Image (cartoon, rainbow, N blue to C red; front, side, top):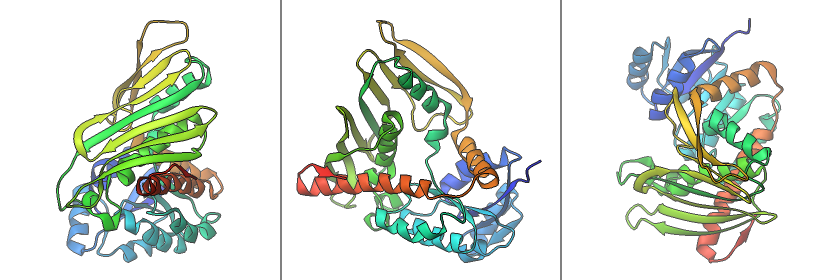
Length: 330
């Protein structure tokens, strides 16, 4: 029997409390041995709530805890690389929230450690069965050749105290949810974009992008168009349009954990748009299970850093295009 992976949770962030900690507690493949916050009081309160045996009053104390094998890093975007670097230097595996950095070049400091420990970006959507099922339809040619994707993704948040509205820590729509649209394009085309053109609407008070739209050229006549907004009604879709059919994923990014999900498909040669229900799944639990399996059974590599770097280069190109008014090449 494989020993459970011993986790340390680096902060009491909402996503850690509401998504990752419950996901880890649901499986015998994991054991949460410690949690940290900037103050001992906050760490102890979280430890008491979730039954975690050790509470650390600093991030450094958790990183140096010899009982911790793997660290989950859900800190604000500008702290992802510095704290991940401290963790890998201490010999810890790291699952870090997206986006991994604010610039692709920042990831290079992690590369010397990529052959020693597992370092991955936490894109939970790629573990959900609906993403695998839809890609199987595309691979089988059921909608013909995939020509373009349309991805709208939005929510409303005008809270001045929310870090998503702070430009110096990587706030704004492109960093927060535009990255999901980019990952969708790369996942379903199974390719990387070559060129980007984008337009941003900047909030005059927060100075972050509250609406970002981009067109990505994947070559061979394939395109992804997305619009993401942090100040619009809550909505999300992924539309895949092929030469002979189409697929619509209703909740591609935030399906109910442990609940069923649904997509619609019009297959080649059919006028019918049929509904497909995907069995209940928790994409956060599946993500954590995949990470634990990798730690126990796979050799570390730089593949995940390369993947994260590509996402960031696309985001950087979108920002550059919005500033220059030109198509930007990657």
